[in-house]
Image (cartoon, rainbow, N blue to C red):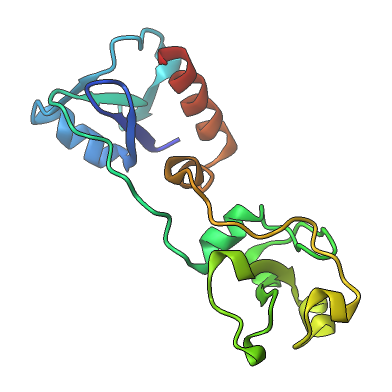
Length: 171
């Protein structure tokens, strides 16, 4: 775990930053170790330097509203790297994006029309709608609402579990 959760003065998550950025904030006096951190498990050890896994800014910052950008990796994260037709969980190199309503029929490039798909299902479906191809979507595509939850999904399971446990403990 080489990432640090940065929270504002009210303990609301702002972002996940690198340990280097966290160390700079601590050394410049712009942030401090979160008060509820007490055990050695709550620190990252890098080159004999202990850095807390959660730091709190010393000044008040509003939690910015961020809309999750529409891009390939975020669609994969939303769909949990799973083909939305056959249900196979695959690595990104074996996945493609599929337009539910085909691009050849002017289907838009928006969250609600794009799903993660394996190459075989994408070729089988071709330029048809799922109904025309006799295929069924596992779930309807949607626009993600919670930016921070999706950002957390890009990190390891142990990091996610630690940050979630900490956020619910401090809430």
